[in-house]
Image (cartoon, rainbow over all chains, first blue to last red; front, side, top):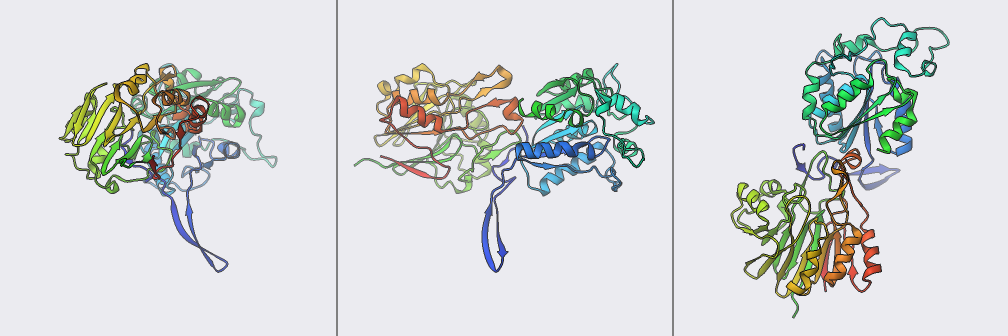
Length: 260
Length: 251
């Protein structure tokens, strides 16, 4: 249980006076729209954008999708050195937005970020969905290295059906590919933290672990180990799905979350 | 002349019951955590409760026994506190000094106020209460299951003016959906036995967060299921769904 705080203090009614065409309107604004924080993996925010739209439209929710600093050409300050630092930054984001009952949804590296946020014990975060996450070390089930892979090789590992992978742009160029440098900047070359699995035993939040049956980056057995490391978790395996369920089978992912 | 009886629901199962000049606080819960949400405003802060003559607490769960919030809010720890032994032991450890341990069918009296513990069941030791003073009586159902012994209340303790009952039928998912709180129909059935002048549902807005509602708890959040069930079983009994902070007078 997170430390109790005064009821209603996280997301207070905002009262303000709005000036509209000469009229001052005293307004009390109560916002209980359901917040989700989406945490992308090595492929960047683009791998989450379509699912963010689906989630927001279908559930009439507020969906926040930050780009991890350092991805997509953005700057990563030196102070943001590790996955834990990134997690603390996102708690600060939720504080700044005065949100509560926030559900984290993280894919791949974003699943690791979600786990680190859950470990920080913020009262603003009520649960996490880890989708084909990385970060733990599991004997005999290593994380497949994505360094130096061709897009075709990567698609083969990341998708149940590689023909469903997003196509490279018509004008040439490499097309969608993981931002390996940005990723390794946080995750390190092994893309794991040997202490994470042990630390997950302290997570008090409910965590839904969802895994693509055909994930070639981190196997379903790795996913089972992830769920086993979390005290309050369930594991859902999605058939005919790889490492990026939100791209390959987004409706099935949404259904697994909503119908749980 | 009949002594005035009024109740103000603060939130969840926290009620401020006034019998004449006596003011009684039930099952205090004034804080929240990552997976415990009132799901409704908390109408009073501890600091603004005003004078409290007695506290009654049904069981030790956080959302009914938020003693830390009472202490933080400066509530006088010499206020008489009634509850089962599990609760009074906790309260003693928090510095409360005027403790009255009551298990099922035991009574304690402070001045004009008599608090009788009535049976309860919830997975941890729980009692319900009949709170009486000046010829007025309130049944407080905490968040108990409906246990058959509760049907003995009218015979053993006389008529009830006001019945306050939980209605969400809370089930714990990791425990195989074990039910731990009476549901709306069970609350209506108990109300029909108690025959109060007025029945008020509580303990229904609570939730565990988006994932918590899917992975930890399952509960009925609609209090109209109680009033509808009661209208079928015992249409002669008045019921009222009350927003937090609204004072209701009981005829």
